Image (tube, rainbow, N blue to C red; front, side, top):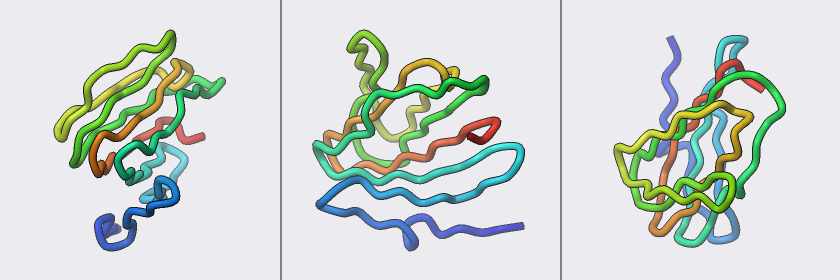
Length: 105
């Protein structure tokens, strides 16, 4: 077993969003991103097979997709998509997300 204290190990930064590698294995990768209002992970995709989930732990923002698609994102929301599908996140308030990628890239 492994315990990670994300709230203790990954804080917020005024300069840019922060990232913490929570877990990495041959089966999946877990990352924690923290955003201040206005910060974003730009829309991007990966040219591999697999899926990504983006779970909002706290805060409010938007899930971003291709063709300027925007979906509201609040604590408790989870976005699931193929990792090759364009995806991103924009924060409206201080926002913590947990990203799972399977298989890991």
